Length: 119
Image 1 (cartoon, rainbow, N blue to C red):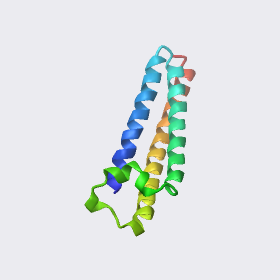
Image 2: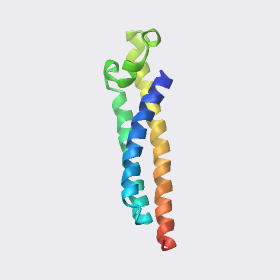
Image 3: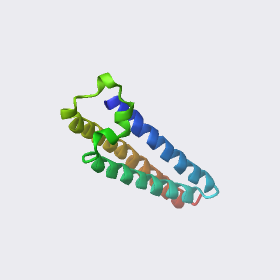
Image 4: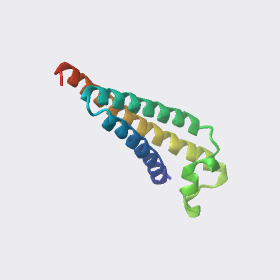
């Protein structure tokens, strides 16, 4: 279940990162502005991931994307399925939120360096 959850969340984050990258490329004429926008958008993505982690606890397991991709033989019995899927998804979302927040901080530091050195 963890592997499937990881792949599902990773794919969603890659699509979000592609959109952020496109915005940053559009603002590449000003490095500071590009990294500020990237840092802000990446922080927003981290907040969305935290929201999804909170939502995973109450979302019905049969309506999750992870459940659809999970092979029948690997699915837990219905009595434990809600708890198992909620726990795995919550941990996965929070892991990706931590990584995304760290990337956001790195982008803000890059924007600060651009500002300090006048580039």
